[in-house]
Length: 180
Image (cartoon, rainbow, N blue to C red; front, top):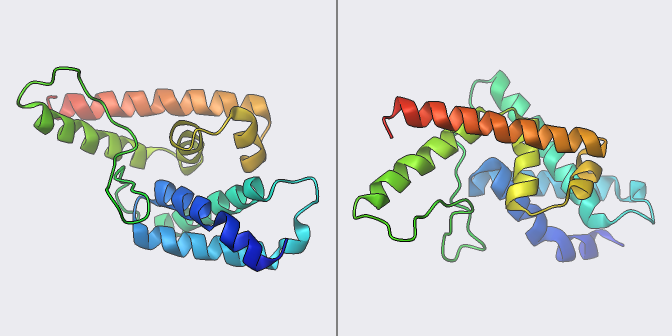
């Protein structure tokens, strides 16, 4: 597989993952570009039996984690957003809580819950956030996440469970603080 074929086949996947991890389009474009540059440089490292998509996911997650570390050192981390859209079309939140018969003030409460969820996600360890995004948003299997993160399957399962619990605790604390 050459660089052009790799880009044509996987650029939407890499960009969408970068967008879900970073939370904004500008950072997602930078992360996707950096990921493809690293992929092109390491194209010879792609083993015949490896799936190029999984390999690119791993590169993208690592580029994002490096960026987070760098930005934390500069104390510049941005707020995580869940307003992930496709290709500039209709924006659609990836995680949404909706009651079947919502009361009139439900939109306000939903906005508060969404902001609390964003804040709670932003407080998670980048490793935990990456695994949660891969599992809950991208719908990746535990085995795929293990391959992407280069961690044992048991570590991935326990890490995702721990990340869910940490998110739940942070979200509950934020909602309690806001009186929601």
